[in-house]
Image (cartoon, rainbow, N blue to C red):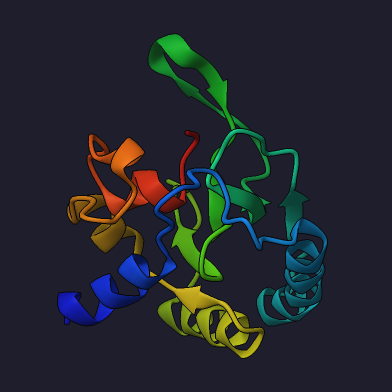
Length: 157
């Protein structure tokens, strides 16, 4: 199973570019995310917010539903967690889903619908757990010291 997931990760990798491949078109990618947003709003029954002010990263956008109110986290102060967040990589149309809320969880059936809708829009789902667990074994020599595929495709560079 993991081998099947590593295959799209390796095929999306770029030997020279760290943040985005040479042929990445941000306008086209954002248009696809915006089209998906409307489907997700309907599926979940709530509007997703878009985060697109992302720079110096190997991902370009997030669609998210935030918890209604922040929580206090020890020394960090108030933190707003997300009920669900889809993060979109600049590479290979990859996306992943993060769930961090301590209060609200979407049902597994809704998460499956979200994944199916994103795949219908041409995105490729990669499980967050595998991204974090699997060490980066890609072809970009500048990134040899990365700890995981998560860092390669869904993190600031």
